[in-house]
Structures are given as C-alpha cells and as structure tokens.
Image 1 (cartoon, helix red, strand yellow):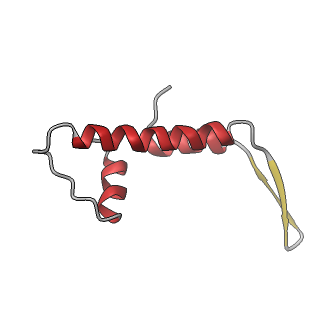
Image 2 (cartoon, one colour; image 1 turned 180 degrees about the vertical axis):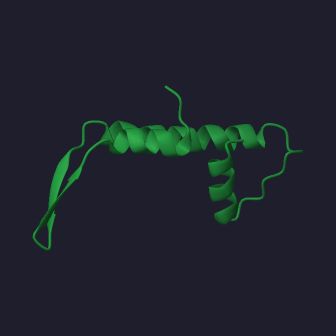
Length: 73
C-alpha cells in the first residue's frame, strides 16, 4: 500500500491489517480515485490571488497532487 495512503488512513482511524485480503487494495484504489478526481478538477486551474498587496499565482496544482501522492498516469 502507498505509504502516504496508509498514513492518512491510520490518521482517519482505519485499522490497516495486511492479513485482511483485498481490504488494503480497495482502500488504496478508493484513495487513488479520490485524488484523481481532485486532479481532474484542478487540471486547468490557474488563479492569481492578491493578499496584502502581494500577488500569488496558483498553477500546476494537479501536478503537485500527482507528485505528492505518487500517482502514475
């Protein structure tokens, strides 16, 4: 199981048990589908945010999620 998925699942109170056949695979698939859905929403997202007189640009959010969670295309 992807280490990041396992860490988040344990923080959410899930009991990760390598002896339960198929459970970890389904949990990992669910996490990946959720992240891919977020990536799809953010794929073309670009925004300029002005805070305190400073302009910030938000680009590449989809790629950032993909890299952070180790999602392969």
